[in-house]
Length: 453
Image 1 (cartoon, one colour):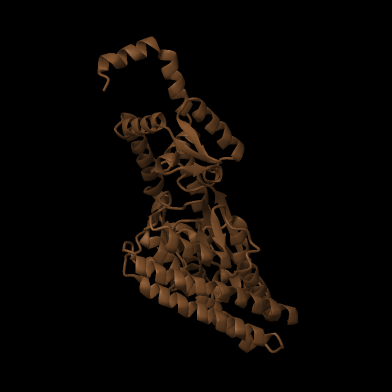
Image 2: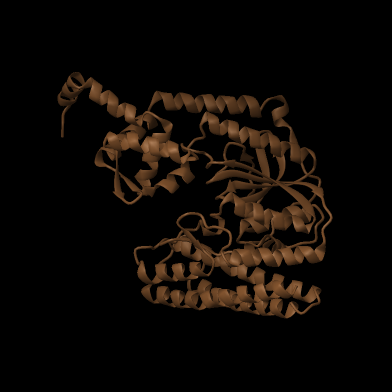
């Protein structure tokens, strides 16, 4: 190991080269790229998704990092840290962690929040004059949407939300990994389709979206992140003042929850926590945990709905999700092929041991297929026509899938940590392989129903 004298000689003899090395990493976008590579190798699309930067910007940053020996290509479109890159980013983070600068920045942020949140108007509390209850649900979108709409006087439950939105017909799995992100890893266009369907329950919904994870880069929000969070908070405040709930992404875990009020600079919430006996503490507006984007739904006004058309639209939307006509996020597989991908991970990738990801997906998709079965049964019972027989068949097939997934959840009950024996993995894979053809048959019945409707 080199001593301080050697380091001094290097700095004295090669200041330009040292400066070029430091300059190569001296951009927050490149720091973010290095930090992502510190976790695992990444491809170009992952950098775009995680940083919010354009593809061209990412390519330019990667070129600089590669030219300076901090990053290397290890495969087609895949990048990794070099030893130099690893040493540099770890050293920089270590120095910053213990630096006076970091302490000063945290002090300035705390002072700013104190000044804005605990003086005069900041202490004011505004709450809705209606009862807000998050509805029991693994899929937080349906639980939060159902709770918000019920507070607005809509007679609905999570099955109505899952059916009309199409969420009940979705299955989405990350290639080669047990990742709990599957039930929420969709493009913005997919979420637009979901809430268009929910609107058929009688309320116009405005989807507010700000691309890029929150916080974007650091553990603590940057000044730019604080501005983003402030914009959202101001919009939510207006809704609360108009006595309307807001469904918001990233209040906890991450998951969707309902904002039922404002206290100072904090959100008052209803979320899954109310279902498991945990206190619903106020969430400071800069303390959101929102991977991918800042995301909110505002309920603006009641609208007239043609009930039969709404049912037909829901079936059509469900078919589109079941047939994968909505594109999957890169590196994800959706529709019937997702069951095969999931089974392959269980059978052929023993290195994948994230029990949480496996069991959480199972809980969500078990619930989703129960919703699909019940929703189609409801539609078949309230409509009269030659098509209702096919809706009934699709309902029965989704019920079969739900029962099989129920067996799967008995093998892998939800918990944050657990072991997956080879025997259990083979049993689980066998169940998933049985579900794939059922999913295809259910979609065929939906298609026949729509042809006759």
